[in-house]
Length: 472
Image 1 (cartoon, rainbow, N blue to C red):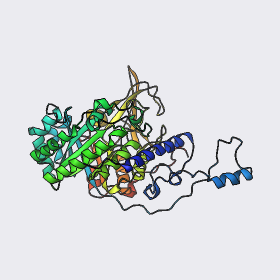
Image 2: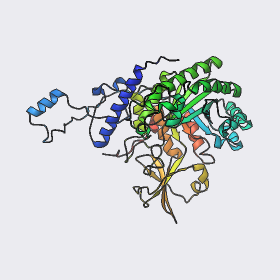
Image 3: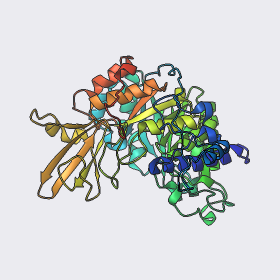
Image 4: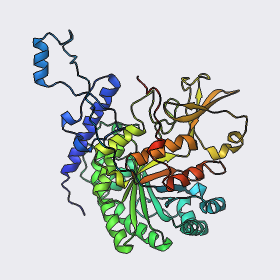
């Protein structure tokens, strides 16, 4: 068990609050310097990360401004000077590990055959989860497929490609994760501010009465390790989404004890985690690194979702918000998540929204839905079908019309994914990965792109820079 005293956790919460202030400042036009606040320092991204901001004036500068009559009539507005660019060498070019999630609804004979040609270095079988008492829920389809004949065939197919295999453990939702990771003496979340696109910090306080005296994860650990041994796989990926700040201690203890038990049973086994592209995800990733995980999968997608305005799932830049791929990479860097242990997760799916008209700027008039390219091969392979490209976000899109009205669909093609894979290498990452394998089946270009990445043929020369970045 790790010690209860977590001074670093308090520091992470402070960073989270200050980062929120910065994000809000960027939205409202206020310019703030993280280094001046004592946050970031050498860990700040050298290039292409979160937006660079001008430092706020020092007290002495304000006094000089007053004496010179240089302050505006509105005393609440303090002028700022232009940011000075800091020259720095780019990090060493990243590696080319390629991680691929395979969800249970894609576990079939067709995928067994396809795995023989997909150049992944790690196949992640998604997923198993725990019942309320912490035992693995053996009734779920993911568990049954993973432990059945199709699971063995998929593992063998990955082995034939010399790929490692991890099983994925999932736990989603604030209430569920509080029951799973929380402690009886929890009095409620300390902080409710945060950035990014998940609603973590807007939720009600944790209810201590909902937590048992012995955390359920204590029961999960031996069962997960036993499943690794029974299947003969190479490790575990932990995908926990949405945590109260009070429950970080339990999350870290779980990862640390799982790692110890896993390494004792299978010394060469790996432990990885998935974390969201929000500021909360960066904090969670840092916590996982402190617990000793081997890899962090930065889920670089869902920037646009069912309830948002239309746009790409993994934008390089955007018109309708602050967060994008480069922003998220910057947040992870500012939290000290080592790039050499990070995988940039990218989407093999898209989103489709009912919209007000045919233009790119048409607004959503209803909820968006996931759009899987493999389910639309007839359309995408039609020689008369024409795509448009959002050159700011770097995403493909098209607009259709039927009896229900206009619909805008955005997704990533091999061409748009190329520059995003280049971004992972440019930032010195361990590699990249995709959610989810099977969503691109029977479509040209995707496997070839992955082969190029694995061969080291995608590098900084493939980075994409729009002619006019948004705001210029």
